[in-house]
Image (cartoon, rainbow over the protein chains, first blue to last red):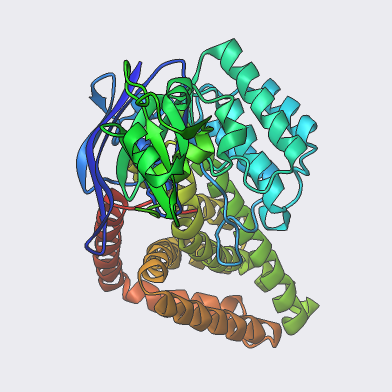
Length: 290
Length: 217
């Protein structure tokens, strides 16, 4: 199965929250969707799952439009971040009622997995959603995402509010479920370096546009952080893709992305360090430096 | 289809239960207000109380459907067509079930009051129909113009409070309801015409609203 979005545009009040986004998500992969606040991550996820109509563009599952298509929607699950406030209609809903509703609407729902995860997270199912902490709300969204058994499962900030132990539990759970079922997961997260270990492909969204879609390891392998005297750095990185160059006095630093077959020019007095995914993201999206 | 029936069917039954609770509360209050000597008359009023209680319950649930149930089912993969059909199914059930109960009650109860009640069944349906439509319109109003929705809810709460007080003070009895519904009966056709216009406006607004609605929980 392939979920494809083509030239997606979403406009709010004359401003494009998404501007010509095209992506193909394949079966059996774990994707990471990373971007700054307001980059359009949640908007993209909601459009992919037909919870938000696009201003332009299309979303298809194996060629069939997803919008108002029951068969296609049955293959998707968007477990969104729950923001419960006093005005939210969900505030007075109990956890068990929310999970029961999910079990009714997701056709592949796994009751045994739901019960196992509720016990694992020690979720107070009789409590109202408004009484839960941010971490507990995240656990509820994780239970829904996992137990839905949807072939394409989208999680929006699933680890928001979770402590480090709970986050590790989530990543373990994700890998376990992925290994057993081969489902496709797309996870949007701000805690990039932690998630990098489980993400096979990363999609970087910036200002409503897709900056890059790449194999995570290949992206990390292609990145170098180069520092030294400005003229040495410039010479070493000549003709290469340079981002986030910053000058301090006579020194300069820059993030460099090497294409296959490329390398830094030899014979220059520069320090070269590898970059992790988080540093790559900052280099691509911070908009600071030269 | 089945999942929609499961979800909306459950809320139909919960709405009916809410209406019954209100009806019993009104029955008890009217008993306190009227005194034990009027027991047969009080019981004959139970279907009226049930209709009013159900109307209140339907109105509140229809109002909150726009704020909670519709975004909820859409967030879990329902199509907009299914949400529209489900909400319609809910409202049909929420109107028909209390009417059926009223019919059965009046058939079982002896006396003239029950016979009068039976003849007024179409008039009794009217508040249920209006509640189902007005509740939805109020919910739509709240989504679009929050202050308007709040004002409408406050007016409704004031009316309910006033009505309950009158029942408690014995000012409103089964005879009152009978007279009220007789008046409604006399104006049944024009009332139904007004309802039909409101219902058409509600369904059209709901259809267009759902079509482009963005799910926000």
